[in-house]
Image (cartoon, rainbow, N blue to C red):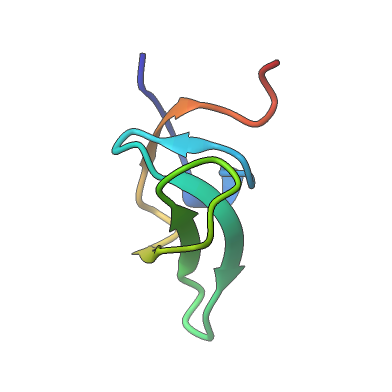
Amino acid sequence: MIKYVRPDDVQVGDVLADGHHVVCISCNSLGNIILRCAYSAGGYPATSILYEPTNLVGIISTAKEG
């Protein structure tokens, strides 16, 4: 089940709806959230996704869940 959250609520270890694993989170000077993602858990960052703070991000599993 996909859960939609604000980009600033995403945590390292979350898995996005497209299957990417979040490995690093930062922001730029314009206030946009940058999620650096890997294709597998513990993988090297392969892609960066830029979100405005008002966008919603679909995640399928979260780092908080055990």
